[in-house]
Image (cartoon, rainbow, N blue to C red; front, top):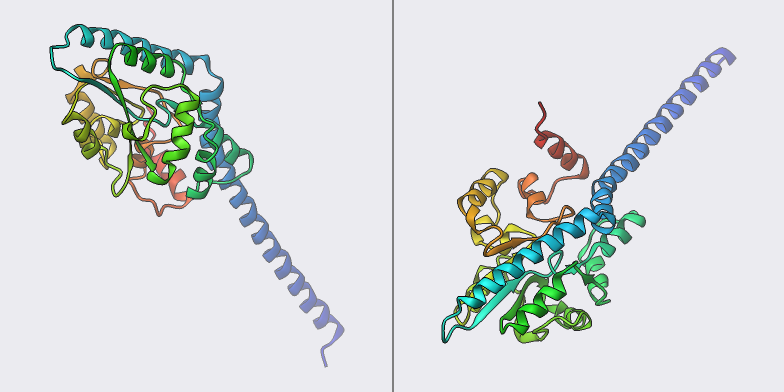
Length: 274
């Protein structure tokens, strides 16, 4: 039979063990919440900047004002028989999707194909500041507009409604080249270039301009950017997007298996301090 003193000692050990286990679970839960909050914070400031910073609007207007100057130059240099065209990306170049990211942040959720589909089905994206006016101006000058996007082909009808709601030119399926079996846009660009003289490309991601940027690390992306430095602001017009893109995937070395903790470690590792 267990003596009273032994019983008290045993119960004390059990209680200490239970407290310890509870503490571990508590810390683990807190860490999980902290990691989730940290991931949310990474996107929150970027979305707030896109939705509220006048500087964001100024950069967009700056890009399209410059594009308008290049457009006028190209039209003046047009030769007989030339069919001029502009190739543009859609998301965060012409269409503002910040509302979708904002909803996920408020609900404490992460991006999924289903959440994106729910958003695109609404056909509710607004125009990036200056985008509609520029494209309408291009069409009035006789320049065709092609929308090359990595939206899935199943999004074509909902996207078409969105483009038509914004009164964008060439808003028809013929001018919308969406992703099929590859995210590279090169073959789709070539399809347009075979029939038209492309005077300008617009995008928020370097893959919107040249295939050489696809899947490359940050060092190569910088090197390749420098090689064509004279094209930026001329034939290539870049729109600001701090929320997502290949620049972020490059930070993680395109490893899509990383956990939030590992991503956070990668981000800190990539920081350049003095």
